[in-house]
Image (cartoon, rainbow, N blue to C red; front, side, top):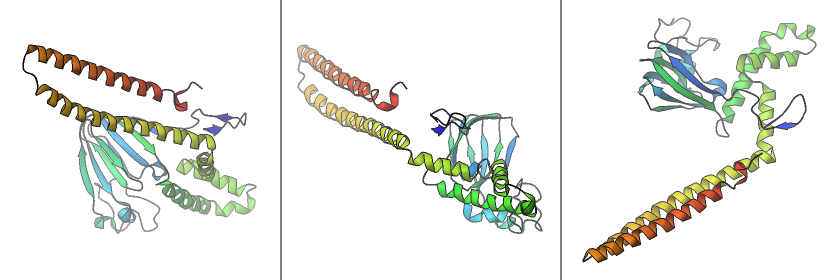
Length: 271
């Protein structure tokens, strides 16, 4: 949900990248050491192939930067200069392999390097929420300071120095303070809050249905076992089958009604 810059009207269409990707890499290809965009959360699901992941927790990330904390090691397997990166050898890496149909979750701020051990296809998604929003603001603040320092020498001759800083920040970081303010405005939007409430109610109904279904099936088993213990002849067996079919049919009809009710929630209405 956003305001269209041309019409100033509200628009619920997607106006930017959704940060969902499909990656295809041949055996031997790899991704250099990095932390994810905006310091977001991410998950990576292997459709096929195999990957090797190497992780470094946020508490050790300073070890892979140079003395000025400007440049990060590109490849942890190359001959890394101890002069330029004095703390690199102290880093303790976490390594794991990802097989087909497995998903890897990457928390905010974890640096990682990834190698395709086979021809690989994966689906990836980056996102952030209230829990890691502080990571986003921290990154923007640090990168803004850096962008400002780079052009400080032209401040006096620049008509819109702050605007230039924000443009450079957006180019380097994929977002700026305006982006962050738009995000905060969206979080306060009543329509967005209503959407979140509706989604929560729907998931609550689904969870309630699942619990109810489990309890119902458990009760069935007890009831059916008790009923079946009284079967003495073929006629009793036929009655047991008729009873079971009737019981299952009644419960199945109730589940259909519940699912139909879910489809009437505002989230699923035609816009």
